[in-house]
Length: 244
Image 1 (cartoon, rainbow, N blue to C red):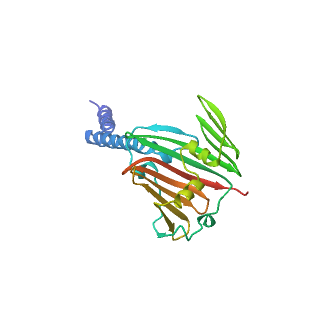
Image 2 (cartoon, helix red, strand yellow):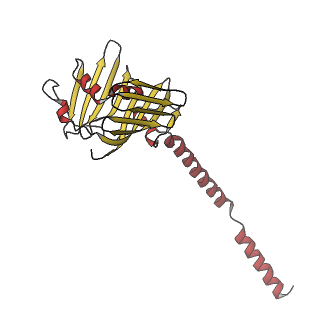
């Protein structure tokens, strides 16, 4: 064998050694790949379906079980509250009622471990209100309520509270009226941003919790319980206010 042939054999052996990856390296990369894939799947499973992650006009149904914070995650829960005597406080004067705005209204219902919710695009211009998702549109012009869905439509004389009732939420006037009734408690955040109204129907085991934004004049959060079980939650967020 010549020196040239010997050199060729050595070169081939080196190239072969470089091309062959050790088994333990392959195993490590395989484990890392599976870990990344598992993390990605978990992120989708636990993150994408949350109500607060929905976009404009989306309607979704989710059969997984949730706790209240998972349904509507919040970072603005009032933690500094003081008791206010409703007889000595004019609540309406504390509230800056806006008449031109847009927002997202999330309406969630829980029953038999199932979560159903809609995220409405909500708009107001003076006395005119409109809420919309792909399968439903609700409009109120100050005296007439228009409801249109994929299956039916109708028009009826109505009041503003009927617009909110159609969506499954409460109007500001309704909550203020409830706040004046026996069995209701009122708390005001010390930063003067939120009024909290709670009410309990002991006879039927039903309780209600509302937050009124003093800045926007909107019922921005509400939770309803039967006993200790939440059956409905609503939240208004992503509020944009415009000049009157």
